[in-house]
Length: 278
Image (cartoon, rainbow, N blue to C red; front, side, top):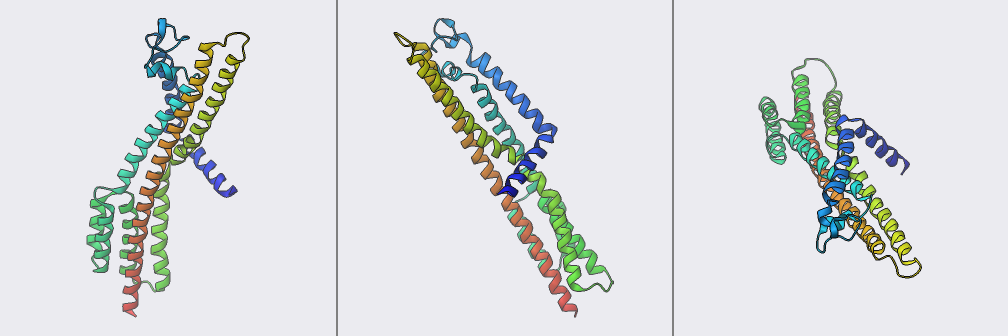
């Protein structure tokens, strides 16, 4: 458990070191405050033009403004989710290459099985992307060892091909997983912020009810609004972040499976070729 937490913390630290990630977080928080203060808090959304009063009936912008000072933070987190989701979608799309990964892997397997390594390399150049880069590394090592006249044992040659594939995979995969940890972190933080807003709102509501004489109706309404709106924003943001995180994780798993499948075919074909020589 400690190893997993340390790994996640390390991944988060690496993501935050990225100028892009750090800039997005700061900019989105500023935009969240601007939206809350100048859009949601515009006097036109409130009775008598006073943001301290009740929102106009049915005006959801004014109602959301009443969620209090945690609302801009929740808005910022929601904007971050969509920003990092778009960034990951573009990155994973580039990693897949120009064609369908499953079709590409099937073509590579067929060409390797037929001994058409040169054509398989041409397919990699045509496909592009992370999957093609890993497969190409294995094929190049395959060609190099096939043409080599050295007396290296077959097992060592197979290990050399596997090593090239693994090393290239280790170079390509971190780019695919980068910033995913931020989505996972937002999923947790957004829920906690929603709960914090709920607690603060209920404290305000009960404080208004506890006043001597008639309860402060505006304070009571604001407290309840703060509780419910922060809960809605926190849970909603968390749910969207979890959906995107699982979606991208499944796509990365599919790419990894394609790499493993193509790599296995290359290694097995090379092993069969070596056995045929002996």
